[in-house]
Image: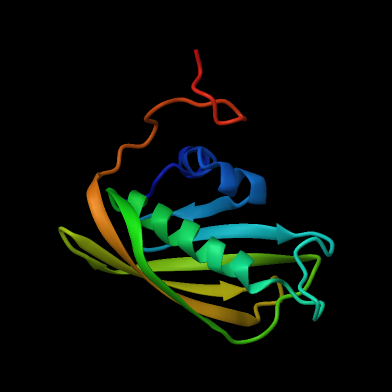
Length: 150
């Protein structure tokens, strides 16, 4: 089932951190979900001059959580592991591609692969999530500051 990418992106931006990082949804369906991040400038560099690994970790968590939502479940992160394979650099687009590999009643497991705009394979993540109930898109409407709309 194909999800409305704009609606999923609005849902993602209800989270202040995702909005701050300016993560965006490029694809959303039960087969795969894709989250993108424009790594502009050197704001997110570590002392080695490469992208701080925490950005990819945060992307993995956000991308996998939204992929679980697209599959109909609200979740909490139980465990998330990353393998960093090559460095990411400034002024690139980072793409996180998620596939759900287990959709149980109480847990879900997702894989997340990262690529840059030159198709270099950057990292791999795996997350386990606790299902808290069904996810309903469009819940409470919020404005750009995350405040409930009147």
